Image (cartoon, rainbow over the protein chains, first blue to last red):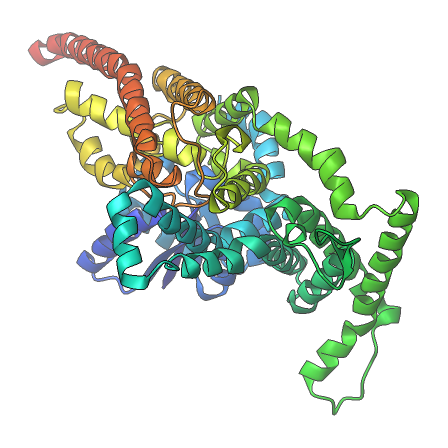
Length: 101
Length: 444
């Protein structure tokens, strides 16, 4: 399972990556999670199973959905979970998106 | 409230933040960061010798009197040719956004740019010598021309590649790479031809004036003058925080407009500094990392001031937020605060969040304008540089830059402090009300 996070520079989402990885590890879930800036996200889409956007760049959701061509789900992260760096909830969101819920 | 945002603000955010031309410019200029940063630091280290005398003497004793040659060479290789990198980068990015691989587009756009450059160099004591080019046609002075030519040339090229009649079909046995080059042969040649004719016609119409000189005189100079002003600085800061107020990344959305402008003003300042120009009035104020160094202390909204105010007046209440927000806040990252506190869509927090940066912009702008603080002469510093250090580096190692950043930090603390206090009182009241409301049910 490959989870791609994206924000303006890939900095603030990388805070979340660590938390999500910790949560995945404690639950025994095997996945790759990484964060990039919106300038380079296009070249990463192909290797991801889901793309989550920082709420501050949610205006790019439609655009990136188009670029993903419907192959993977693209969605903004809940601002509250994002701000509090709630890795567990965001991981849950990513997994339910992959399952297509 | 949310529907209002989705209806009225999101379309503008999408227009600005997703416009392919603005994105191509922004991403190309940001992608050039290695070039602008090493050039900036080369100039910085060369000039520090004048400010910190012992350092200058030390360098001279180790490397001899010509110790500045290396820095000068690096400046020459980066800043003196800044626009060329921009032309390549912008056309590559723009072509890619159309699904092209961007390789041929980049080369064609560069040819279009070069063919518009005057071939007779202005050499003193001559009438001009053919074959000499002034570097003023390649450095930041030509940036606007470079952007315009790169965008236009790429647009023309991409449109021509879509015309089926121009595609030369090769037999099946030909390797794909060869076939690919042939597919863009006619469009590439035509684009360059069109620009050649356009350049010629332009010179005929303007009595031999070149595009770059004309653009600079009629458009760039008045525009930059208008942009490097206090009202424009306030407008930008206000818009950035207006977008953040509804949870959208303001600097990212407006980057297509602000990045080329600040880069151009910043690199011009670095060029002046490299040449040792002492007249501070010649330097632009709203240049390069001005906002990062003096206004966005701790991130947009100058939230380092908020963090410190919380430490002063709300340590217990904001324990979790401080633990989450302080470490990234030192490096100018504040999304945890913006979405966690939250500041976004919170009418009380938005008052200091918008007013503090606006006031700090005014203070910083006037302090530089009145000559109290050295102008921003280093075109590019990492935006994660902590508050104070950023001000010191951006002004080319002048203490006045660090002092200004710290004064602004103090201002932001003073503005945030009452709000930390008031929200604390409000929370207490809410808690009490909840307790009194709950008491009867517990008894019952």
